Image (cartoon, rainbow, N blue to C red):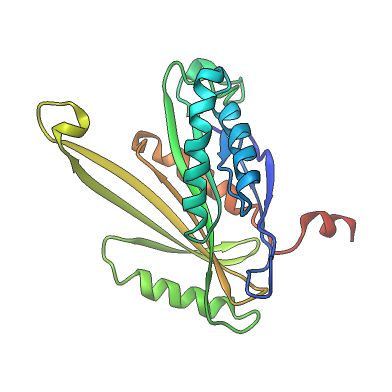
Amino acid sequence: MTPTAGSSALTVPPISSAEPPPVWFLTPEGFFALPLADDPAERVERAESFVRQLYSRGSEEIWAPAAPTYATLAERIGDTGVSYAALGLFSTSEEERTPTGDVARHDLSEGAAQCAFTLAAVPTEQEAGAVDVVAQGIVAALSKDTFNDVQWLDLPCGPAVSCVTWRQYQLGPEVTAAAEPTDFVTAEIQVHVPFPTGPFTAVFTLVTASTDHWTQFVDMMGGILQTVSFADPVEALTE
Protein backbone atom coordinates (compact mmCIF):
# COMPACT_ATOMS: atom_id res chain seq x y z
CA MET A 1 0.00 0.00 0.00
CA THR A 2 2.36 2.65 -1.28
CA PRO A 3 0.61 5.67 -2.80
CA THR A 4 2.05 7.45 -5.77
CA ALA A 5 3.40 10.98 -5.58
CA GLY A 6 0.98 13.78 -4.81
CA SER A 7 -1.66 14.04 -7.48
CA SER A 8 -3.90 16.92 -6.48
CA ALA A 9 -3.37 20.38 -5.05
CA LEU A 10 -5.93 21.56 -2.54
CA THR A 11 -6.72 25.02 -1.31
CA VAL A 12 -8.84 26.22 1.60
CA PRO A 13 -9.74 29.71 0.37
CA PRO A 14 -10.73 32.57 2.66
CA ILE A 15 -14.40 33.52 2.44
CA SER A 16 -14.48 36.49 4.79
CA SER A 17 -12.31 38.26 7.34
CA ALA A 18 -13.48 35.69 9.90
CA GLU A 19 -12.24 32.80 7.78
CA PRO A 20 -8.70 31.37 7.98
CA PRO A 21 -6.11 32.35 5.38
CA PRO A 22 -5.55 29.82 2.59
CA VAL A 23 -3.41 26.72 2.95
CA TRP A 24 -2.14 24.48 0.16
CA PHE A 25 -1.17 20.80 0.23
CA LEU A 26 -1.01 17.68 -1.95
CA THR A 27 -2.75 14.35 -1.46
CA PRO A 28 -1.71 11.00 -2.97
CA GLU A 29 -3.54 9.03 -5.62
CA GLY A 30 -6.27 6.97 -3.99
CA PHE A 31 -7.76 9.90 -2.05
CA PHE A 32 -11.34 10.77 -2.97
CA ALA A 33 -12.41 14.20 -1.74
CA LEU A 34 -15.89 14.33 -0.25
CA PRO A 35 -18.21 16.84 -1.96
CA LEU A 36 -18.00 19.67 0.56
CA ALA A 37 -19.74 22.84 -0.66
CA ASP A 38 -21.90 25.56 0.87
CA ASP A 39 -24.34 25.56 -2.05
CA PRO A 40 -26.72 22.52 -2.01
CA ALA A 41 -26.86 22.29 -5.81
CA GLU A 42 -23.07 22.32 -6.06
CA ARG A 43 -22.87 19.70 -3.30
CA VAL A 44 -25.22 17.39 -5.22
CA GLU A 45 -23.21 17.87 -8.42
CA ARG A 46 -19.97 17.10 -6.61
CA ALA A 47 -21.52 14.04 -4.95
CA GLU A 48 -22.52 12.62 -8.33
CA SER A 49 -18.96 13.03 -9.57
CA PHE A 50 -17.55 11.64 -6.30
CA VAL A 51 -19.44 8.32 -6.46
CA ARG A 52 -18.37 7.76 -10.06
CA GLN A 53 -14.74 8.14 -9.03
CA LEU A 54 -15.09 6.10 -5.85
CA TYR A 55 -17.02 3.27 -7.54
CA SER A 56 -15.26 3.54 -10.90
CA ARG A 57 -16.39 0.05 -11.93
CA GLY A 58 -19.98 0.62 -10.85
CA SER A 59 -23.12 1.59 -12.71
CA GLU A 60 -26.11 3.87 -12.28
CA GLU A 61 -27.64 1.22 -10.01
CA ILE A 62 -24.83 1.93 -7.53
CA TRP A 63 -24.19 5.60 -8.25
CA ALA A 64 -27.79 6.87 -8.09
CA PRO A 65 -28.56 5.82 -4.48
CA ALA A 66 -25.02 6.50 -3.23
CA ALA A 67 -24.78 10.12 -4.37
CA PRO A 68 -27.48 11.52 -2.02
CA THR A 69 -25.89 9.65 0.89
CA TYR A 70 -22.52 11.28 0.35
CA ALA A 71 -24.11 14.67 -0.30
CA THR A 72 -25.82 14.45 3.10
CA LEU A 73 -22.61 13.24 4.75
CA ALA A 74 -20.71 16.15 3.21
CA GLU A 75 -23.29 18.62 4.51
CA ARG A 76 -22.96 17.30 8.04
CA ILE A 77 -19.17 17.27 7.91
CA GLY A 78 -19.13 20.81 6.58
CA ASP A 79 -21.25 21.94 9.51
CA THR A 80 -18.48 20.81 11.90
CA GLY A 81 -15.97 23.29 10.48
CA VAL A 82 -14.02 20.78 8.41
CA SER A 83 -12.64 22.43 5.27
CA TYR A 84 -11.57 19.27 3.44
CA ALA A 85 -12.45 15.60 3.87
CA ALA A 86 -11.48 12.56 1.85
CA LEU A 87 -11.67 8.78 1.84
CA GLY A 88 -8.45 6.96 1.06
CA LEU A 89 -8.69 3.55 -0.61
CA PHE A 90 -5.56 1.55 -1.42
CA SER A 91 -5.05 -1.94 -2.79
CA THR A 92 -3.15 -4.33 -0.52
CA SER A 93 -2.33 -6.77 -3.33
CA GLU A 94 1.39 -6.93 -4.05
CA GLU A 95 0.60 -7.95 -7.64
CA GLU A 96 -0.93 -4.53 -8.26
CA ARG A 97 2.31 -2.68 -7.60
CA THR A 98 4.62 -1.20 -10.18
CA PRO A 99 8.32 -2.20 -10.24
CA THR A 100 9.04 0.83 -8.04
CA GLY A 101 6.49 -0.27 -5.44
CA ASP A 102 3.84 2.31 -6.26
CA VAL A 103 0.19 1.34 -6.48
CA ALA A 104 -0.67 0.81 -10.14
CA ARG A 105 -4.39 1.44 -9.61
CA HIS A 106 -6.89 1.27 -6.77
CA ASP A 107 -8.24 -2.16 -7.77
CA LEU A 108 -9.58 -3.45 -4.48
CA SER A 109 -10.62 -6.95 -5.58
CA GLU A 110 -7.73 -8.58 -3.70
CA GLY A 111 -8.10 -6.53 -0.53
CA ALA A 112 -8.05 -2.91 0.52
CA ALA A 113 -6.76 -0.62 3.23
CA GLN A 114 -8.77 2.51 3.86
CA CYS A 115 -8.61 5.69 5.88
CA ALA A 116 -10.46 8.94 6.47
CA PHE A 117 -8.60 12.24 6.16
CA THR A 118 -9.77 15.70 7.18
CA LEU A 119 -8.51 19.25 7.52
CA ALA A 120 -9.99 21.83 9.86
CA ALA A 121 -8.77 25.32 10.75
CA VAL A 122 -9.17 25.99 14.47
CA PRO A 123 -9.01 29.57 15.83
CA THR A 124 -6.05 30.06 18.17
CA GLU A 125 -4.95 33.24 19.88
CA GLN A 126 -1.54 34.13 18.55
CA GLU A 127 0.33 37.11 17.24
CA ALA A 128 1.47 37.03 13.63
CA GLY A 129 4.44 34.71 13.29
CA ALA A 130 4.31 33.40 16.88
CA VAL A 131 3.96 29.82 15.68
CA ASP A 132 6.51 28.36 18.11
CA VAL A 133 4.53 29.64 21.09
CA VAL A 134 1.32 28.10 19.80
CA ALA A 135 3.01 24.78 19.04
CA GLN A 136 4.51 24.64 22.53
CA GLY A 137 1.08 25.21 24.02
CA ILE A 138 -0.37 22.40 21.91
CA VAL A 139 2.37 20.04 23.08
CA ALA A 140 1.61 20.89 26.71
CA ALA A 141 -2.14 20.41 26.26
CA LEU A 142 -1.96 17.11 24.38
CA SER A 143 0.72 15.64 26.65
CA LYS A 144 -1.68 15.75 29.61
CA ASP A 145 -3.31 12.59 28.23
CA THR A 146 -0.86 9.75 28.84
CA PHE A 147 -2.43 7.71 26.03
CA ASN A 148 -1.32 10.31 23.47
CA ASP A 149 1.99 9.87 21.66
CA VAL A 150 2.93 13.53 21.14
CA GLN A 151 5.88 14.70 19.04
CA TRP A 152 7.23 18.03 17.85
CA LEU A 153 7.71 18.27 14.07
CA ASP A 154 9.78 20.71 12.04
CA LEU A 155 8.05 20.96 8.67
CA PRO A 156 9.09 23.04 5.65
CA CYS A 157 6.15 25.35 6.44
CA GLY A 158 7.06 25.71 10.13
CA PRO A 159 6.67 23.94 13.49
CA ALA A 160 3.91 21.39 14.04
CA VAL A 161 2.77 18.91 16.66
CA SER A 162 1.70 15.33 15.95
CA CYS A 163 -0.48 13.23 18.23
CA VAL A 164 -1.02 9.50 17.70
CA THR A 165 -3.87 7.78 19.51
CA TRP A 166 -5.03 4.16 19.39
CA ARG A 167 -8.55 3.27 20.46
CA GLN A 168 -10.25 -0.06 21.05
CA TYR A 169 -14.01 -0.55 20.93
CA GLN A 170 -16.09 -3.64 21.57
CA LEU A 171 -18.77 -4.33 18.98
CA GLY A 172 -21.75 -6.46 19.91
CA PRO A 173 -23.01 -9.47 17.94
CA GLU A 174 -25.88 -7.39 16.57
CA VAL A 175 -23.31 -5.30 14.67
CA THR A 176 -20.82 -7.95 13.59
CA ALA A 177 -23.15 -10.96 13.20
CA ALA A 178 -20.57 -12.93 15.22
CA ALA A 179 -21.43 -15.14 18.16
CA GLU A 180 -19.29 -13.14 20.58
CA PRO A 181 -18.43 -9.44 20.98
CA THR A 182 -15.59 -8.37 18.67
CA ASP A 183 -12.79 -5.91 19.36
CA PHE A 184 -12.54 -3.05 16.87
CA VAL A 185 -9.28 -1.08 16.85
CA THR A 186 -8.60 2.27 15.20
CA ALA A 187 -5.44 4.34 14.96
CA GLU A 188 -5.37 8.10 14.48
CA ILE A 189 -2.65 10.61 13.73
CA GLN A 190 -3.56 14.25 14.15
CA VAL A 191 -1.11 17.00 13.25
CA HIS A 192 -1.53 20.61 14.39
CA VAL A 193 0.18 23.22 12.21
CA PRO A 194 -0.11 26.86 13.41
CA PHE A 195 -0.79 29.39 10.65
CA PRO A 196 1.99 32.00 10.35
CA THR A 197 -0.51 34.17 8.48
CA GLY A 198 -3.34 34.45 11.00
CA PRO A 199 -4.73 33.35 14.40
CA PHE A 200 -5.57 29.79 13.33
CA THR A 201 -4.12 26.30 13.55
CA ALA A 202 -4.57 23.78 10.73
CA VAL A 203 -5.51 20.36 12.09
CA PHE A 204 -4.84 17.44 9.76
CA THR A 205 -6.39 14.14 10.90
CA LEU A 206 -5.98 10.65 9.46
CA VAL A 207 -7.82 7.74 11.06
CA THR A 208 -7.93 4.11 9.97
CA ALA A 209 -9.14 0.71 11.09
CA SER A 210 -6.66 -0.92 8.68
CA THR A 211 -4.07 -1.02 11.45
CA ASP A 212 -1.98 -3.72 9.74
CA HIS A 213 -0.91 -0.95 7.36
CA TRP A 214 -0.39 1.73 10.01
CA THR A 215 3.26 2.33 9.12
CA GLN A 216 2.33 3.07 5.51
CA PHE A 217 -0.40 5.46 6.60
CA VAL A 218 2.02 7.32 8.87
CA ASP A 219 4.46 7.61 5.97
CA MET A 220 1.61 8.87 3.79
CA MET A 221 0.69 11.54 6.31
CA GLY A 222 4.34 12.54 6.48
CA GLY A 223 4.40 12.96 2.72
CA ILE A 224 1.31 15.17 2.78
CA LEU A 225 2.74 17.35 5.54
CA GLN A 226 5.92 17.96 3.54
CA THR A 227 3.76 19.71 0.91
CA VAL A 228 1.84 22.02 3.27
CA SER A 229 2.30 25.67 2.40
CA PHE A 230 0.75 28.91 3.60
CA ALA A 231 1.90 30.71 0.44
CA ASP A 232 0.69 29.96 -3.07
CA PRO A 233 3.28 27.51 -4.49
CA VAL A 234 2.55 28.70 -8.04
CA GLU A 235 3.35 32.30 -7.14
CA ALA A 236 6.50 31.17 -5.37
CA LEU A 237 7.70 29.46 -8.55
CA THR A 238 7.17 32.58 -10.64
CA GLU A 239 9.05 34.90 -8.29
